[in-house]
Length: 306
Ligand SMILES: [Zn+2]
Ligand SMILES: [Zn+2]
Image (cartoon, rainbow, N blue to C red):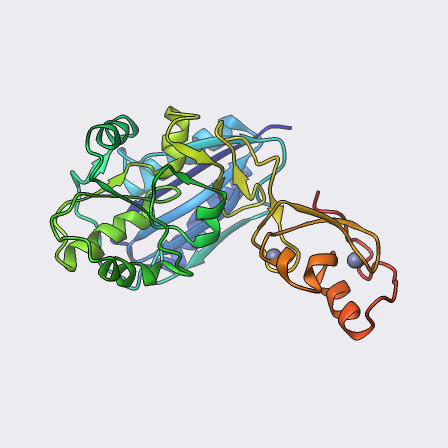
């Protein structure tokens, strides 16, 4: 069955969040929508899905109407497997963690480059600094050719990284992320620190891939649901699963030394002595206690992530 997926965000001041949460959940339930929505005093940020394209379209129309946001950009994709098992609204202070809650990007910002403009700047202005604002494990499985990797664990480390690079305050900087929302805050952060020439990729990598598959973005794009990542055609990753030890994108195939179960683990864990040869936290634990001893699979419902 095809599942229709849409990712979108919108910044706007919101109040009465608990009542709003109930309202959104009710609407999602009525239309059979699954997904995760982050709700905060500064707006909404979500990825959601439905086997019914029509219902997803209705849900989007309701969002536009309810939040009065006709200009909202939906990043759509498809998957044969459901990317979410349920619908959930989480209320948070920030809808994208940047450590500056309550600072809303100005309406009608001209700091966005369309994927076409983005390509043009990269081709015509080789001095431009290109920066991936995502986490290191997202960068590892795919990024723009020539992009700097801040190698950060969390987005709040981003401004500090930029300061350390010694980038001139008027240097042209292009920043990008998965769907665009992190960069909205990234630009504000950088402007507060005195950088005057920062631009972001509108709609993020997901929007870029929709318009330029096999363009300047190389590899796959990590997404925060069951798909793990999407490929150049925005299809669910055929290559990556999630590492059973640490939860990062995994593409190293092993057979568990303890229970012989086939599993795919991540490159980092494949460099660690026990994790490299075990299929799960449990087998790793047992192997540490009794190296060399075989055992049955400990979790009855446990299946290969391959
Ligand atoms: Zn791992
Ligand atoms: Zn095992």
